[in-house]
Amino acid sequence: MKKKTAIFITGASSGLGQALAIEYAKPQNILFLCGRNKERLYQTAAVCKEKGAEVVTYIFDVTDAFAAQEAVLNAESTCPIDLLIANAGISGGVLGEAEGSTQTRQVFNTNIFGVANTVLPVLERMRQRKSGQVAIVASIAGYRGLPSAPAYSASKACVKAWGEALRGWLCASNIKVNVICPGFIKTPLTDVNVFKMPFLMQPPKAARIIAKGIAKNKAIIAFPWPMAFATWLISALPACIIHPILRHLPKK
Image (cartoon, rainbow, N blue to C red; front, side, top):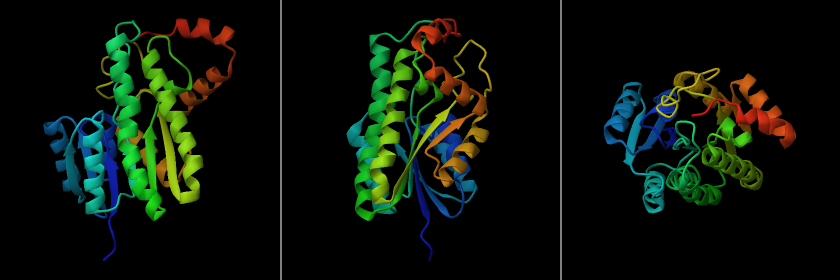
């Protein structure tokens, strides 16, 4: 009997994580779905089961390193993880103000250490068997610091750089690493934004783009392309030119 493909997804109770879970919900896959909200996670699991996938759920917060490691190792004991998608994250900035002390720590704990808490335990196992794939959800905001959300931009720049470095380091161990840099996706994180969000994308479409990029083992999966190109261009411009422009961007 052919082994099922094991896929571990954090932040699967809503938004992009939920869409990714549904995108990968196929009879040949076993999904390990993680989230903090039990009710919403179970709803996601139910939809995935209806589509034929085998589903295991874990309720924990990615900022809890012990709980994250326990979930990953439990999943590994059930079926070695072929693909881990570190998607869980929170937004930053509110009502035109940059993140304060408390919110900055929350953003860093979730978006940086939460990713590390999830990825590091599985990397040890993947390196031992010399196979596996890890996809880290960063953001287009990680290309250049945004004045309206310094902590969020910094957190996404951090995991983007980490993922790029891991890809180079782990290729010798036959482990694939992909960095996902989406633009605006209609999720609970963006629903609080009061400004117009260009190229706002629905989660199912974003999930399809990501799944295709992961299947092709693309180093960076950045979309939509007009925003990805514009952000890349902005990151290449001198600070004296770009800072006045960034100060006039819409604020959260």
